[in-house]
Image (cartoon, rainbow, N blue to C red):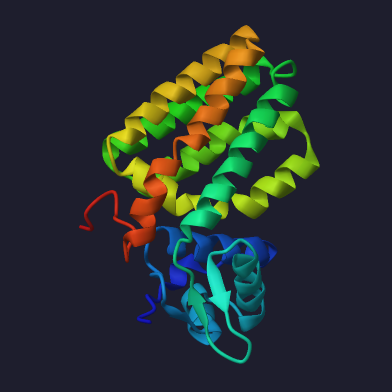
Length: 232
């Protein structure tokens, strides 16, 4: 694996554990680390400017969420997308986001709604600019408001377990015209939450995540996740 060295991206010690995990997760999602590619902890540690310990911990976490596979006594590699696992994860994630709306809708303050609105604006701009990373980040921020306000730790834990495998599918959606529909769905969900319309808000929240299913086969048969923008 050709590892790009960038000393400006060394992670602060306080963020090592989560930071290494997120960097490796995102590298798998954007195709920097391709399906089937062997992952050597020494090379990854050099790339990230850290010791091998947080890299090994991150690889264990990535294995638990289905993004890497490790054979006993053999190498660790980037996992291909398993369509069955992705569909199952999508159903669980959709149900959890629906539950987040149920538990959050009556507690949402104007500040929370403003945060969701700003996140969706950033999401729309990222799509217009062809910035996949920013689109994924803004999408996460939008949905995170409802999860945070819901305050259900069990719900949060389940999402942390099953959401990562869907990020490759989300990235594909944000590289196509289907991503624009997500902006509209976000806005609709926001309006329904603001109006306190629980029945329709939960339906839209569920629809947002279930709508990933048609893209699962596309990602599963691709060797690389297509980038949203050309590299300069």
